[in-house]
Length: 162
Image (cartoon, rainbow, N blue to C red; front, side):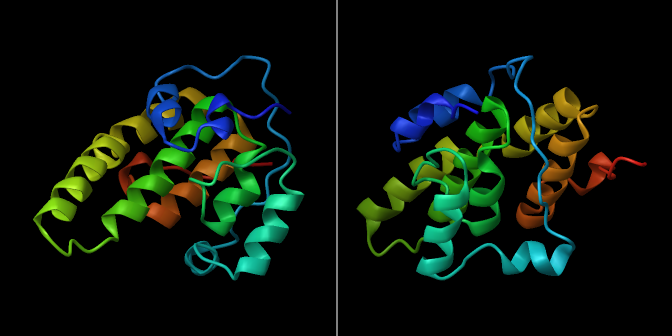
């Protein structure tokens, strides 16, 4: 499966823009190995450098460096372009939101980055859920993303039955 265009651009410009693009109708979602539960979801945010390298090697496509969390690396290549873009954007949001400003200039940089990557994240996520509600593999991956980043507990995301 081909990766989204932002794989070649780690600045996040494509990720921010591509989130609003509808997924290609012919993008198959391969079997996704989502986090088994909330504890697993939290535990897979960060891994050792060796685990990250292994996950990138096994991913099936080039995962942009913006995607740094282990479980996101594992599911990235099986997702359609709009979900890939959201994953890259959310990883950037988490990165900048966790930074400490050490002076006024850095504080302004972090505020701008947080606004760019974090604003409207819940609204964008809700749109992804609505768009991919009928695809069980993507829905299962979105459940894991929701658990990892506490995006929208009110969406009532449940795994597919059967």
